Image (cartoon, rainbow, N blue to C red; front, side, top):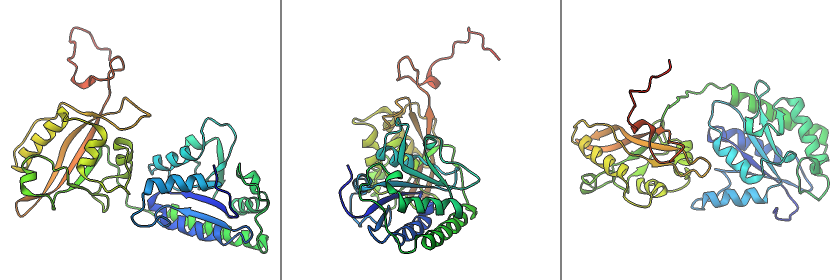
Length: 334
């Protein structure tokens, strides 16, 4: 339920790579309306340090009249933005006006948003959208009851803001980025602050999850596998606790392989795994493997664990198909 007020609130959903674009769009939109004013929320800029990030996201979503998704590059992982859209509205509704996806003219919005409004990021289309937003905001959102959003010289203002947003969107989409695709989910841990006695027991629960730099744990891995986000203060123990409540076989094996690898000894594959913390897909099952250990002065300071996804037997929902013995008596069809 939207909190009553005299401001038209817009929640700008974006990828962290496009944060600069989101701030630019926020500034242009807030400079458009005069009475009532337009207020935009951009995660990463409008959350105070130390605040509960997930709670702040949900609170601002419920306060907003419109969700604007900056859909720049289809190659990005858009799970989190779709999650925000899912919190904001119901996807089973056929007529949803309060979510708008701004996208490049050469592309289209994500498939789950195909039934929602889409605005091509050209000056012409953006100008039309901004004019309609001010003159008929009740046609853009479902719960705005305060009439027009007044603007000094709307024709000139909408033209100017549309030109600025279109140029910034085009620059963001066209700017080449060094991008790398990782076929497996991976968890990167910092072991430098861990005690030697803890390292001898296995992977220390207090090892920090690395979330910055080129060698980092990806946002979609944390959310899709463990149900957490970048803004949580994460340790290895937090991730383990989020997918299990006891001492499972996969962790026993993983700690054993870790101890062998710190002594620079080889080891075989792990034969156990865990269910992802994802209520939307109960068949997601992952097997962890130690991929890399970084040493400094003979001491392990970094660890990368990759998560290999396995399919489950749909009949039992528990057994790994990869571990089931093959029946050689049954001929295989080529």
